[in-house]
Image (cartoon, rainbow over all chains, first blue to last red):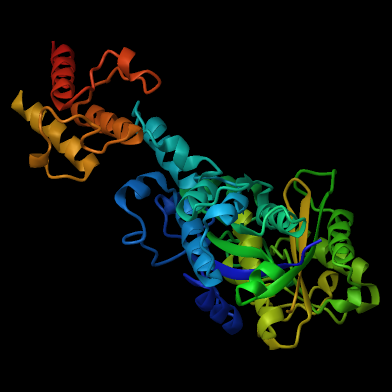
Length: 402
Length: 87
């Protein structure tokens, strides 16, 4: 078994257009949620979201590329450029043949779907642009990342709703750990903040109209975000040999399925994923200082997740810090685990714990140290990142300081 | 009819990232650096501009009832379609 390290990180999300901006916002506990600026927003009953503001594709992509890139693909490329530049890797020869891009995504090119359904249904047009399919397909982002960076190894998209990115990164981790690939590009992206995307989520009645308040007794739902997080996972010796800066080590993962309900979370499924990740990383509950929670801000998730953590950590549950950064960057659905891994990297590398902002009232059913409202400086050896998706699909990753 | 020619050349030039004056009637799409994706995009733009249906199947361009061998054949094809539509 090889050891796997992270040698590059990139992102764009409501908190920032790159990693330093995002981590600064997480340290300051800044909220990226605001009024949605989308077409027909007045017909939405949920009018808030964590949108990426001030993003212009001008100068980033040429005209032909723009015709082919949905917003979720643009986000993935922006994040991949930052991550790969930081890693210092260039892909040629055998490295190119063995390195691929495995990215999480749930909705595909929702903006493309939305705009083209409008044009054929609402405007009655009978012709759509020839690139509708290559723009909207879920694998477009992974494919364009592979094309831009000459990645010719295993490349595909993982779709498991809110756990997509964690499943994708777990898969990439496996490939590097087993020696199949010396490096993999992984993470995820999502862009569902368009009229149809938000309208569909409204139907679920789990969205908050006022804000995301994870673990707080007065929480009333999730708030959607958008963006991408992309990382370079690299075999440790490969990274050391070339003198690469190492951000953190990926030490374990686990994936489980609740096999019970399509939307309601299960304590057992979540607990098995958390304990499975610890076992895989050969860690004990007492070794973990920080958990980046799934923490959606829904009634069901936060109490179930708290109960699962209490079960797995037992007497250590009071010592572990658990925060949900979704209160700041929103829920990026298929991209969320990737952006949240940044908070875990910040914890193990910089010893800074991102807070759970908007925390207003303790909930006895979420009686953990949720790092309320203010970041904390603590040395962290090991951090976990939880993702528990609709469909009962769970994936947890473990990072260690290097 | 020269309006049609000018518009078709404008569409092709835009796709090829050239000035319309650089697009000659005997230029082939290959000469202009337009690949298969660029071709379907050009056909889409032509359909939008003239509100016509171009009988073109990317699986088998040779068998399509629309000759794309060079700019002049494309212009002639579009002129024919526009004429059929208005008659």
